Image (cartoon, rainbow, N blue to C red; front, side, top):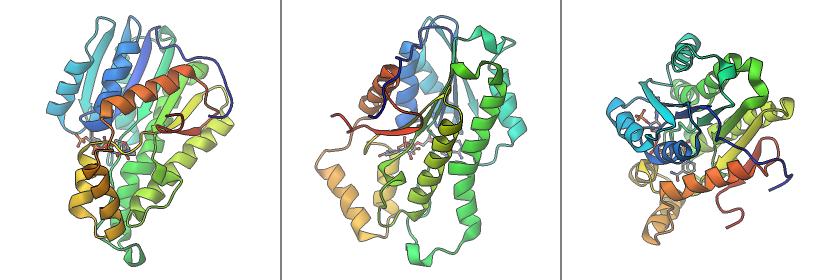
Length: 267
Ligand SMILES: NC(=O)c1ccc[n+]([C@@H]2O[C@H](COP(=O)([O-])OP(=O)(O)OC[C@H]3O[C@@H](n4cnc5c(N)ncnc54)[C@H](OP(=O)(O)O)[C@@H]3O)[C@@H](O)[C@H]2O)c1
């Protein structure tokens, strides 16, 4: 990790959002961050599946944190809907009541793995992919920044990125291009707003529904081989392990603005 800055302390009253919190890495991030949040904190969980969000909420309960969840399709939500959801979770409290406000942009999908990169032409499908994985991540982040603009120096942003954002992977052109665009947006933001802490955390290969999706859908042989060997050799990380590492990186605060930090960087 590049430059060193001060530790990040979440032990004050914190307003925290986790997207894609109904399963997988998002669920684990929510459960881990909940342990760190101080009294009078709010943890807002977003995804579509309400039942699974409620299971995550149960895992996050601590005496310090009020856990809220909202079913929302983040590929379709308007700016006004996102703002409403974020404001509702304030429950009349002022943004200055929170020592820290933090958002984990974890939501993500893989896109069409059944099309060869040299045959991609369904722009409508690509647009839908980018709506969820890039455009509305940017929009949600903007709504968050607008709400907390008077206390911008208390804002922390964590983008859950991937090795695929910086290294091409055969058969994953939707995913790699989306992750690259999303990560670069956060890097530019970090460049402009040095007082906001921005981390691009890459969680490593993690045992979630995403892995099964690759094995079921991929047409690219190299891609299938890579993921089959991850699975067979038992090298996939548990969501809790990478979520713990993300918190460790975050709390240490030793990342430069918008830095891409990978699970394996100091393992
Ligand atoms: N697994 C890995 O090996 C790996 C590696 C590197 C990076 N990542 C990144 O880590 C993040 C989480 O991945 P994961 O493996 O935990 O995936 P996952 O198990 O498939 O979880 C994806 C999450 O996103 C939510 N989501 C999907 N579409 C949504 C929509 N339209 N609106 C709202 N929420 C939606 C899902 O909830 P609902 O279905 O309930 O909406 C779910 O909570 C992603 O950004 C992924 O790119 C994963």
